[in-house]
Length: 242
Image (cartoon, helix red, strand yellow):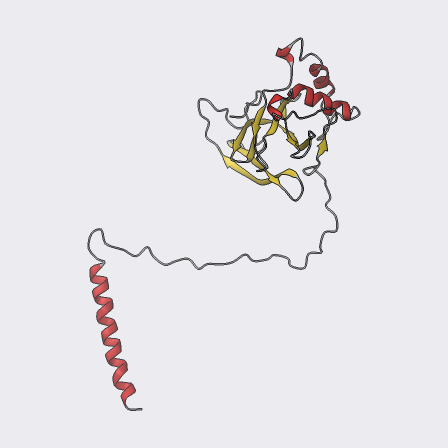
């Protein structure tokens, strides 16, 4: 094919001219400039693919432990008309033998619960908050409990759509410096004991499959101290959610 050698030089010359024009147009001030070579995209690489499958988890932290609250009926108006102290008392009565874990509270906290009516200043139950965390149109009851050792328990109670029953769908405790609502998530912020200047942030989200709030995101974040926010590692009682 004699015509092929003639067309290639013509095409190369034309391409060189086009590139020269483009480069000339990009050289002026404010024009497009090269940002350098682009890093090669790489996918995740599996390490140690021969690891044996785990048949059972070594620890159970109780993230999916839910429990009905006996003796508490949710009124038609919703959880805003419930007494959070009565809810915590009912839950404690249902598990009198437990003082730790998702169902229990400390003995000293139980003693304080008995004084909430006469001495509100010593009551360990914090002001309640309300938010539709499950997306079913009904608000959940969010309760904080001050515990010994600078711990704060956070519990969430869900009203059932077709009955007046109340179910606990979240229970955890930690040395919290902030508790925040972000959309339908509850974000717990706690101090980092081993990394000064950092804090742990855990977002709990509703999981319909398990019917519980689960810790879906966990991260360690560097935090700069401000005037209205304690520095990570500082002592003191936990702040209420905003």
